[in-house]
Length: 220
Ligand SMILES: C[S@@+](CC[C@H](N)C(=O)[O-])C[C@H]1O[C@@H](n2cnc3c(N)ncnc32)[C@H](O)[C@@H]1O
Image 1: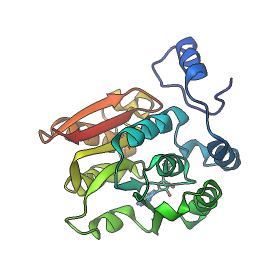
Image 2: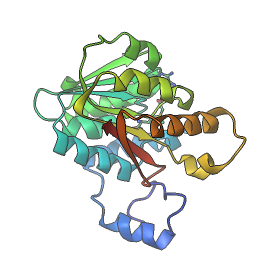
Image 3: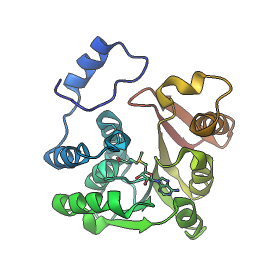
């Protein structure tokens, strides 16, 4: 399989997934190097799915954001992808609690020549987001960290989102577990988040069944 390591959406027949995958743009050299190193970690399953990263790349290329935020950076796959697609002068703020994982990300940002457009803040992402000026304008955001805070991250980002802004939220299908009743923990948090977004009349949203589900949200 040419796209080894990517996750098949839980509902898609394998033949269909293979057909699509073989035609999607393959990882760049920089993405491949990052994947190879991440694949050595026992936590490699946390890495952003390649097809989902392609979706972010196309959105960023088309949208030409000035200021972006990522909540949950890990070893840097989605941030490397977003940063590489940014127009000149644009900035990406990355939030993560882990020095260890993001040390890998930093090295790959440098190798790809995109480190100068990224600021990494280590610490609980909710504290980082709450410390941002109320009038800071966010054009593009990725939410991909602890599921119990998804709704809090959304609340902090949506109030700063520009009229042309987009929020991309990963794992909103949660391998199909969002369909199960009487759940707790991360599944319940994702169910509550999905319901919260669906009920937010300020926005337009759609979930793309790619990877583990990527929900795209803009202002209505
Ligand atoms: C699924 S991984 C992110 C994957 C990443 N977007 C990528 O491209 O591979 C989730 C990340 O969220 C971070 N994280 C978990 N809880 C956090 C918190 N409260 N604040 C900030 N980061 C957190 C973890 O350290 C981990 O690196």
